Image (tube, rainbow, N blue to C red; front, side, top):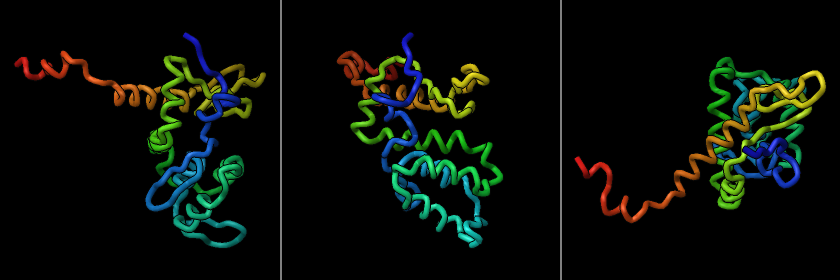
Length: 176
């Protein structure tokens, strides 16, 4: 099986940093990364010595331009994280990726990856969502973002399937 092992160049659209509007609870985020970081936070945030509500913090994140997704990720490392984050983060990411690929152009681009294995190869030690290719990590990682992308791709393929004439004329459940 062939693979895509880096979400850069022609495959950059697979990255969570790629511009794609995600709407959640009345707030529009410019990338999946913005949405993901916004979902990590809990009520009591302090930024530059000021107390900020989680809604204000989420809106602040949403207002950062798509080109600043890297800064958003850095911000996510210093914000206080909700207590249940480890339990919900995979579901949050799955929801965000599903929303991203509801955009017709991105949906088609994901479908066009065919059956290729999708691996979020990186050098910044993300061994949870990706596979780090740096010397010490030696290609280790869980590749959870790649797995989520492949799951969403399969869901989209199922949605796109057109029933055959036989399926329409002779539905399987009508044989009982």
